[in-house]
Image 1 (cartoon, helix red, strand yellow):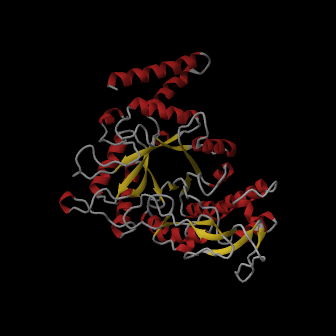
Image 2 (cartoon, rainbow, N blue to C red):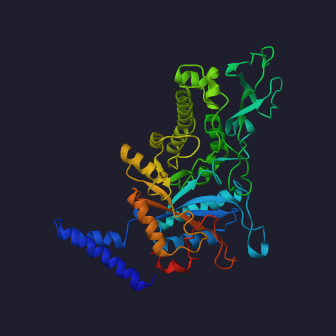
Image 3 (cartoon, rainbow, N blue to C red):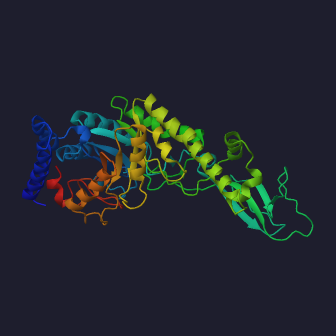
Length: 444
């Protein structure tokens, strides 16, 4: 798209707006409206997710890229440290600082100060990759699950580290005694179904160097507290003079996390009956009660995630002078109403004729009166990363706007060392919104 095309589109939009004013609006406001479109205030500008690969960053390049953002009409960024793209190479100026190292925290401090100087909003991903976790999360605080094993009578399942046998059934009848032994009737046949409190053993996706480790348990306050102590506190201390506008939690995506070690006690407290004799309903159809039991099981998981993860994070953010921006969807099975526990609910996805988490977030904001709805925008747009044109970008943005979004968070802006040849570094999931893109000249 050339400069003439840009001017033509802008003039056409303004003529349409002015025609609307001619039908009854105050013409005195047209010039003000025009100025707002030509020079939007910072809070109306799009943001970018800024990937720090490694992290291998230098202060001169951080400042250079922030100045490019400002010149490109971008209102702010979200720092997200992620996987390394190159080995250390002194000749090329590439040095991967371990996540949470003194060098990394110093880079955060510099970025916060420079962002404030340039008038850019700074958000901070409260972790590396996603979901939250890392080397500070031991197995007992890692994402849990309910493992179901079946065997012939007389055979016992092998338990792995951190697992606990909680129940066994034969033909729907309990056969596990209090001492952990299985007692079967004489001549028993068929399969014994065992229910085991276990762990997903899922690790953080796309972590930075030194951020590798288990995903935390979203149903246990002790897990998020351990994460805040190891990650949150040091980062916000580094940004003490320039706290981020918001801390960010990416989409949950904790696969198969459907249990926690104290689930039976929590279920009894919240639902008013003992789940133990009804555990077979979670693995098989036991009749008319199956759907009710599964509903109560899912509702309990949702409440635990809200009470043990979302509420503590929001409270922690406010206590540190910032806000909590959250993509509250995925597994654990949060609900639409869970969105009201975050200061800034965010969606993702452009699906129009089927469910989208974008519409979920904006619907919740409409119901709860939250004025700002953001979206992770342009993820996977025409992958590989440089296929998308400005028209493609605009078309997807329009879909987000139609779904109620009024804050775009572009996915994304890849940090690139000066020594890396064009087209620079890029994230695997598209797209690229920095000066290495050929159409950068029309970005404003």
